[in-house]
Image 1 (cartoon, helix red, strand yellow):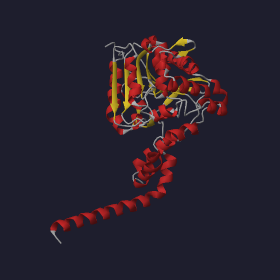
Image 2 (spheres, helix red, strand yellow):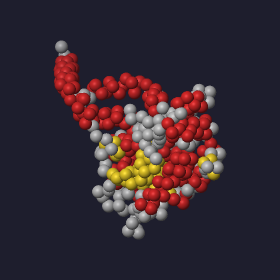
Image 3 (spheres, helix red, strand yellow):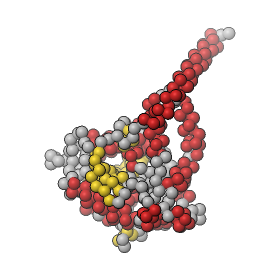
Image 4 (spheres, rainbow, N blue to C red):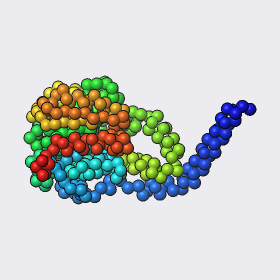
Length: 367
């Protein structure tokens, strides 16, 4: 046997021993896994509920740092899933990034729609709930304007709100927000076409769009990753407590499904996904046209290159329709949810995004 062959054999033995030791550690730690799952903590940033309307609650986060800017940040999440993905864990919290930078931070928790909410429309959310919350936030924080940060569907509604009430928004920040629905890069754009999806039949049958329907649809967009690779990776990391905490925090959020008000879902699919009325300038709320060119404030778009739900081009396209002098895009190589919780996002993207918002806000000192 040559020296090279002997060295290779030794390395092979070391690899086998190392993997055997890891396998032993994984199975020894297996009894602890249920406890980790039970005890995992999410949404731990201290806050107060400062406003309520129907099922909506407005959270104001307690800032251990100084509040350095006149304009607070109002965070508007989607109507799908729960908003604590933006405060999932202390080291993966968009809320804490904004607090650390010196902002007064408020977040809309839409609550869970009931059967009685099935008639709520987009105009009720944008011209009703968001309008009332925005007024309250400005009064509560003694501010003339606010920074509006919208994630996914919440970003679409935030853009609508800014187009209707431009005088109240200092900066508009859009996280993976669908704006232009004309492309076919994303499966949702294809699946929601008239010839494939009978949205009227769904809503007429169920009243509200079931959360289970939405979750199964999202999961099937990446079936191998969601049903095979995720659990293979879980087994491989049974000896890693930090990984297990992150895994179960995400699982809690992913499975915390809520329905979407039926008429709102119907409108979103028909008028936006199927007819792309927002960028065409044909969309109206309470008989008032929603014109993106009315947006004149600075706009920051945050996108994920591997986003399978909202293609980056759909968000970035807003630059072609607004009248804003300052429009900037920031991106990372991550997925739709990774934009909010990945270590890459919190290592680079969010410190830069928070700085951008700060640079376009007015300092309390007057500087």
